[in-house]
Image (cartoon, rainbow, N blue to C red; front, side, top):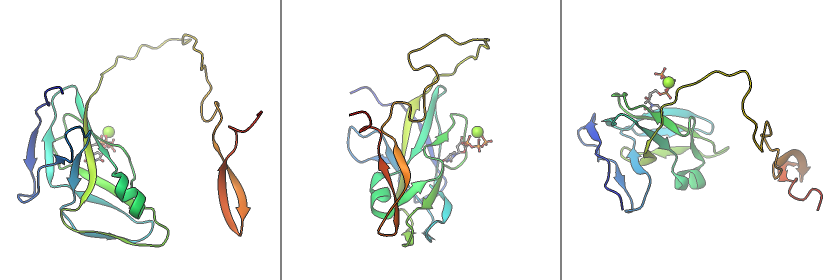
Amino acid sequence: MRNPVDVLIRRVDPEVPIPAYGHPGDAGADLVTTEAAELAPGERAVLPTGVSVALPDGYAAFVHPRSGLAARCGVALVNAPGTVDAGYRGEIKVIVVNLDPRESVRFERFDRIAQLVVQQVEKVRFHEVAELPGSARAEGGFGSTGGHAAVGGTQGGNRYASVVSDREGQ
Ligand SMILES: O=c1ccn([C@H]2C[C@H](O)[C@@H](COP(=O)(O)OP(=O)(O)OP(=O)(O)O)O2)c(=O)[nH]1
Ligand SMILES: [Mg+2]
């Protein structure tokens, strides 16, 4: 395993646990909320994590959702993944939304709500040209290779989407 990158961290909340990896090979260190919150269906909130960091130049941190919260409670991050710039010294916040159509979701203080993935990022220089070089994909996108969902069906009064185009032409 490569040596870990050293990142300076400051507790905005003196009691908050330092973000920790659940297992040695994990990509994300869990972030907690320092404020309890209850979200009605469809409601969103900006939750404080109690920490701020100073990332080395050439790095960024990305605030990713936790799959367990998504699968069990329908909790998503509105801006997933959130981007924490190397120069940002403010408290890291997490913009959560309750996508469950029926159930409220409640977070207690220090519940784990997201995970922080630190990565090296390239800085680029843009060079304007009149024509871009060709490629196999060219301008195809947005489902051009098939396998996308078609919307608009109904069964038993419920609208549904189905994956159609992998079957096309077979
Ligand atoms: O999930 C997030 C996303 C961003 N940030 C912080 C760190 C980041 O460096 C700063 C700005 O984020 P971003 O560039 O995504 O937001 P913006 O709307 O473009 O704001 P700004 O004009 O300040 O760049 O907000 C968070 O704490 N959590
Ligand atoms: Mg920005």
